[in-house]
Image (cartoon, rainbow, N blue to C red; front, side, top):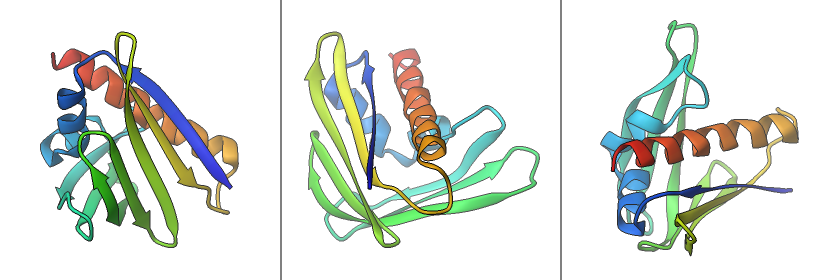
Length: 135
């Protein structure tokens, strides 16, 4: 099953693309809630290139790596990637007031659809707030 989350970011597409693909920016916005953070990020933004983000609870209680391989890059409009045995795509389209960012990904079996959608949407909302503040 595919899950889709999206938001509109009030910024030019070049700024939105850069914030989504820059490791320094990713460390600032990539968290679903205030008690989590991304402590490290790497990006090799090319087809066949890899990415990785280390996400950790601020209390040090747990953490995990989110990593994958880019399968298609059409700057500044589309990113497709594999993570584990799942796929995802990120589309950047012009919208009134900014850029619509739509993330579609394969669901996994461990968490409910609602939990997955909620977590990914929270991260995307955090991204939109970060970019808007960065202008």
